[in-house]
Image (cartoon, rainbow, N blue to C red):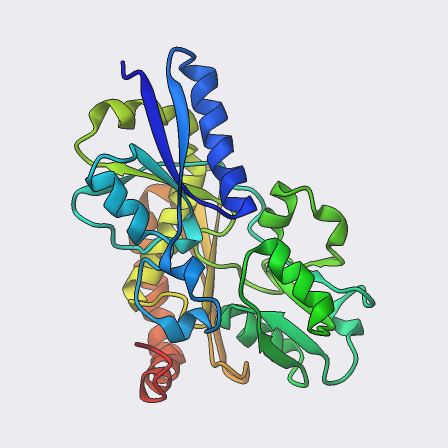
Length: 312
């Protein structure tokens, strides 16, 4: 067995929490191994003045880490699964998907307890077109402003840029011990989460059989099947952060239920659907649900985004 495991990670507090969670688990199961963190800066970390949708492309938070796996600088990389493209390079693979933390979105506001209590025309910050569309569907009067940066940066901007509220992933806040700032948690019926939100994806080289075997201690089967269905939905639409869509999978007694939405940026047109079946049919369920919503009205939304240059 190898003597050292080198984990690639971004340098934000949340990314480091995630990498340390993986490192600590590996140290516990393989005490003979030295586990090291190797910090990286990705394109998505460096370009903060633009919305993610404007930057375009896939792998904004993963490409630099993948290059280091190829040259042998690191053995694996820890990602938020929602940041990972649905199509991975041929030489790399998802070696494990961890048990999911809550996938829900959370409202953080210094003065108001819920979305409904925000004043008319309130300024709300988010970097997500998915969140924007669903927020405007519920509250068309809101003024949505772009909010980029790591969790602490966004919390700081809540005050310095006079937001009435911001929306963040609940999982990130919980992992950083910041639950106390949450004023409202949105259920998946209120705001459908992003693909893979709350789960960690651990990427490694496909030909590294030893590493793949070692990563089994981190893998959660139910989370894998649920997020596999979600990622199949996204893959069918060939979308990324530029598409205002969400999909959430849950598993009960071996059955996977996927609930999804495709929405216009202004939230006026929303097409929602749900599909259930055996979890082993996750890929098919995701594809079929995406096709159904695409034909119902999602195509018109995506075509409009392409015409306006939102989709690269």
